[in-house]
Length: 266
Image: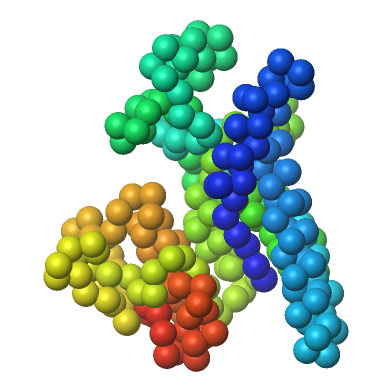
């Protein structure tokens, strides 16, 4: 089972939306998420088909456009905090607030950006078809970018939500759904570090759940980067998983052989 992020690709689509707004309708964020799932999933499918064929392995590869259910009462929905899309001047930001009703924030002093909610994932809408495909031997690509956020309205209908779901938390949910033993989270560093970016930074090669919780409490891991990965790793272990690994793409294979990366176990 494979899942993936989509932040840069959604950002590109949002820039295109702005550039072509005089000629084409602006696509809502849930549609942009669906578009990136198809686009990135296709690239994974093509690449994996080639590699599997060359290795003489007959495994079907399929991408599922995945919707992720969130709680309509999640407090995060009323507190947009996730910056997305292009940067704007203060004047343009003010215009967008008035014209579109967007929440616009100053993103770390770099400029003004739209902010959207980032609620917690609670279920995968395509759960049954994903499990059937996986259990019948398919290599399934699902829940890209955390999945397309959906909520249930007062008519018991599921509707798309303009929001962003953390991909790591959805990955843990997906891994528990298929009863996976291992959750492998690939990022741009070889290990999880204590005091990251400082002169005394220290790689963590092994962690127990209790240690990871202690470091979270000490705010060792930055919000928006390593913290959600640690939280997802713990969610997976506490809901039936056996091992979580966090490492770089280059060390993916070696980490599964327990030679690289940060390994978190019970």
